[in-house]
Length: 483
Image (cartoon, rainbow, N blue to C red; front, side):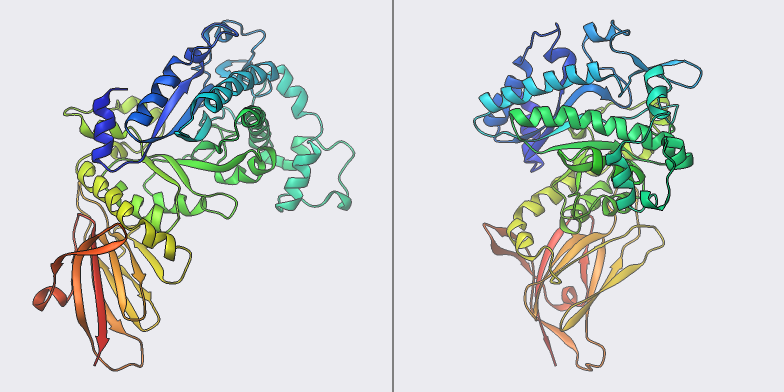
């Protein structure tokens, strides 16, 4: 990576980079490993004082086996492909090909062992295993080995998970002696079958690697979306409906991470934020509204990572344009790559988040921190209730190339508040039944530095009637009284 890219990341207040490691370059000859790319990344991360999340592109990326070494690509008998109904082979090694899984696990284990030995600065903080796994064009594998497994009994571990999650009734209520996948799961059998074997394969790879170096590992997901049937998105991936399968089959993953290009970003964030699934977003749209979603992801969903895809493109004078054919094939909203207005706003969001980090850590998970986000054009605002005051948030109209309304209110004490956000105005009200009026003892726009508030502008007169926040995220601190 060029030094110029690292320095530009610094200008945008980023602290971590997500970088791929390719199996085909790591093990170009079977059993022979080349760690020069990894070592170069580690050296640069230390030099530029950044952390790394590594993406292991092994057996599967985007539902294909494009990054496996040449020696594996050319041996399709040993490393057999998944097949569609009728026998058409896919460019995807079958998740039932345990020989391939073991070779991947061995290579991943060598990578993790190498990191343990050389990454003395702990530059790598987590690892993604594979990328958007599953099968496109079919709900399951129809190769000979898959057919034998599909007509056999469902594994006990999966049966137990299905009962626990309420997907099927308990066995005591009368399952037949031969309970194959179709008998147990009906029309969902194909996708559940795929999910079980992909999750089991990734569990094997991750668990072997973590024995060498127990870094946090996660799997990412190509989301389920229109036209909604398994195979139109990678069948077997950890979409929301299949999370119960993945949680049962792959306990080595601390979370499942959504790649989000759909317009309803906040809905996906909330679905993948669970007590057993902290939010990590390794890929997300990079149009201007992504800055608003970043603010909401961190402050409301307590995200560990929010990473617009290909963020380095923001500094290109003529950024690469993804062809229409590609976005259509991947079922991606083309507007998600319109970077008009993104660079400045997103950088300001990351800067602001860094400034208020200590405040956020103090108040997260309490009733003293409340967030807001405009999810749709028809939404006009929201009403946030605190102990002694209520806040009326009015959203500004959505504009092309600008973020949408988003932010948070911190109740510092009964009369002191910090408002963080953009594209909205804020009015303060007394509680219902309290007929007194509200005014400001002090109202300031400013920043935090080393945990201390620094006033940039004292607001009074017309400025204090309504708190206006525009397209650049701001902090406004206010002390209130009633009369």
